[in-house]
Length: 338
Ligand code: HEC
Ligand code: HEC
Image 1: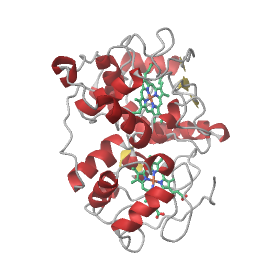
Image 2 (image 1 turned 45 degrees about the vertical axis):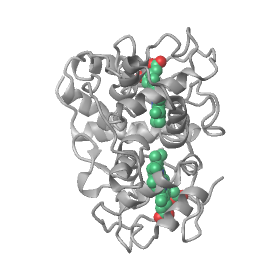
Image 3 (image 1 turned 90 degrees about the horizontal axis):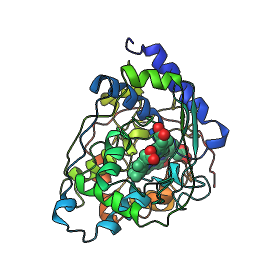
């Protein structure tokens, strides 16, 4: 199968977005656009869908699990916002049980449903090892070796640190098991892709920069854990890759399913957040109200992010100060919504 042309990939992206439609409005297809990138990147990275070796994980050998579950809860609920897709009813309660079911329809993938992440043995992750969960999150490989549909944002999560990814796996294990069989109906297109070009991302091992209110740690969060760049960076080109020259520049032409335009977060003073103080940023992230007084649409997961620590939010702000300013006026589209 030859590569996917720009036109086709745009089409796919458009369909993916369109498919999110009214039923999923207001919830996050955060991975969707990056997702397409992942699909295509995967095609380059792994021909024929080779299997990714299970990662070696620090605590599985050391056995030091101090604080791991709490760390995992923090990431799942406040930073990586897994509940936006995996909660039982993401639109109403992203903090609810992670028993899955949310549907994404796309003609090239099929009907993809966010999985049950609770430790139910028959229908959830009960039988999965930590390493298998980590591999699913970072590489997009399911326990049985199949590749996950790139709606799951494994490209963005690819560089999540070993320890943080393990923490996520450990936290999921503490959830109350919910019996809820969720199955994606991957279609023929997906199967063909799987045979020829679609495979999991390469194996990885990653460490996070030291925690603290530093640009380096902020970059780690904004790029690899909190999915900020996934929504706020426009995607471009043959592979619908994030546009490196317009990192965090926002866009007035987001995927169709987006109910609001992701803002320009670069330090441009006229069109970005260059004029915002650190406190303005923290206040916006905590209250969902920006310095102009606009209430942000909940599609921007501020209701989860507001629980991040001061240090983490400051780190993200400090990192955003270091990205090149891009002049790009992004009109707000959404009226305030609840
Ligand atoms: C943008 C939506 C979205 C987000 C955000 C998201 N996921 Fe997923 N995830 C999915 C979808 C959809 C699938 C199913 C893909 C398929 O069936 O091919 C999935 C599959 C998975 C699987 C494989 C489970 C199985 O039974 O096959 C795991 C594990 C997982 N996600 C964990 C997570 C964790 C942990 C987070 C947060 C760090 C997360 N996901 C964030 C959409 C999402
Ligand atoms: C699911 C997509 C998505 C993710 C993930 C996301 N955002 Fe947003 N963000 C948006 C959208 C859309 C808006 C515009 C909301 C509106 O117009 O009401 C927005 C608005 C904002 C604003 C307000 C800017 C202004 O000028 O008013 C800030 C600040 C912001 N986001 C920061 C972040 C940070 C930091 C992260 C990661 C921690 C993040 N966003 C992750 C979609 C997202």
